[in-house]
Length: 262
Ligand code: MG
Image (cartoon, rainbow, N blue to C red; front, side, top):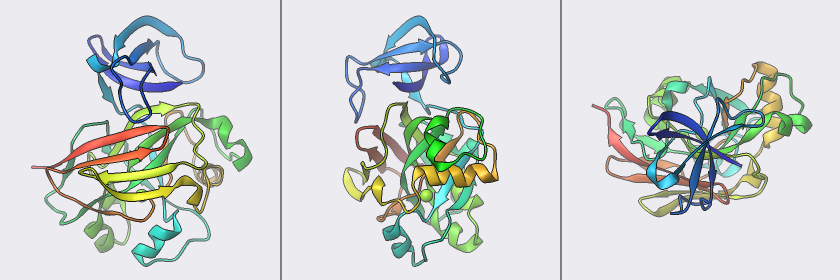
């Protein structure tokens, strides 16, 4: 099932999306309204809309977004670092989340704002101390993310809260796929239609089970929490007027324009 959130004539609603292609919204796609929340077995209100007539929002408002740094060897190489023995984690504030097609706003304080295309995990139930082999049981599904980073401030600060935490720096979407197998799919980032990142999720140094185990030993995970699993080689800057699109093969494409924050 594909779960999304939409701005509909009746307000904001969780929906099940049926009939959309993996890379975008097809003309016959339909959004069926879910009563209350999408965790567990959803019940439907009976209302539905053509997907083309509503606006897709970020598919979830996470209480926290936990990110893995340095999880692809080729990206560690391009950054000049070393592979960590254990996953390096950091947090993006939930106020950085935006949905598809909402502009990423470059703050005037940064000279260089980069895209980082990533696969994202969405947690489905409260959990802690989850063993890697049981991670599947606590995962609701998967979505696409862009871990937008003020690269100059990441280097100046020595830690990443400011560089990764600006409003609009966590695009998520277009939906959560609950049946998706993320173990070996292509991850691709395009800037104005030019391919800038192309890798495979099978090249992660720490796989999703290991990541969930590691994080849930540190903090309780809540339904809707999002985990960004790291970016591969090819990161680079974006400027206002450009459009960045991240595609996870078979899952979907998350596309956002870039603007300036006044
Ligand atoms: Mg990242």
